[in-house]
Image (cartoon, rainbow, N blue to C red; front, side, top):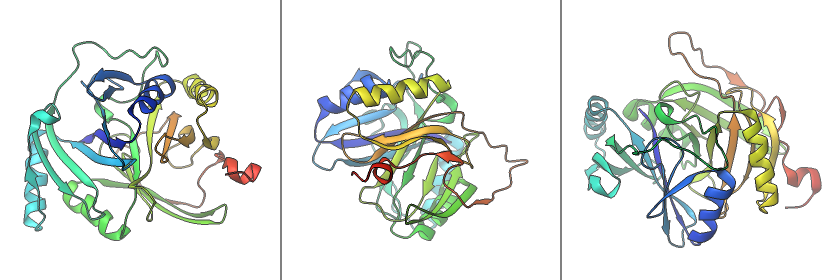
Length: 283
């Protein structure tokens, strides 16, 4: 299982194209689709007013997909088979999670005919068998979302962060589906369906170069470069053209289920990740 794809409904496709390719280093393949590894595509942009997450695609093996579908249907969830060609997969099922976020369960993704190569991130991203990256989803009822993803989709707890951050209470739970420390995390309600998505570069320098591109491109930085205590990610946060955030990082730790012991951390970051608004008084 892995985080297979992300879809966003955005008002300005041209601005997002420049952001995806010029700042993040993704590669466009047409029809609003973009790559960050050897999958045929990982991100889908559609034009519309929502300025938000449109869907989350979870990729399974056939056996694990069958098992997840059986658990979902036994629990009374409305999960429907959908046209696989729309996403370029062999099998596809759609439903809503407890927060009302559209999720898609699929197997058999199309792979690209050429290896991934980005003009601005030449060393590429940590993706492929680990999935796109990660995302932090908004929840209406965090406990309900956590139960759904653990008991029915099969995610596993990595750890928690419970603290106060510049006057805001933080209660985050992080979950893995493969060796990546977390593919999804849950906090409280957000203005958008997600707080942020993350891309992991293969070198520390690529984080610095992305930070420079963001500054030169007029991207609004939210948090300075820092390192998290739980996944060890060296990263920064900034705003996408639609107002939700992205994290660009390097050095995320991996999980071995045979030895991993979840714990609770009392801080967001070991150092850095200072919100620009808190430092400057400007929003």
